Image (cartoon, rainbow, N blue to C red; front, side, top):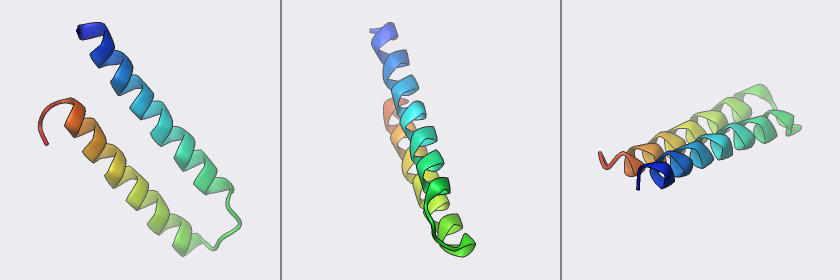
Length: 55
C-alpha cells in the first residue's frame, strides 16, 4: 500500500514537471506561458492533494 502510494505521487510529480517543460518549449508569448504554467501547477497541486486524501 505504501509503495504504490509513493509511486503514484512520484508519477504525478514527474508528469507535472514534464508538462511544465513542454509548456516552456511552446512558441507563445510570455504572458500566455505564465498563465498556462499557473494552471498546470494548480491542477498538479490538486492532484497531489487528492493522493494525500486532503481533497
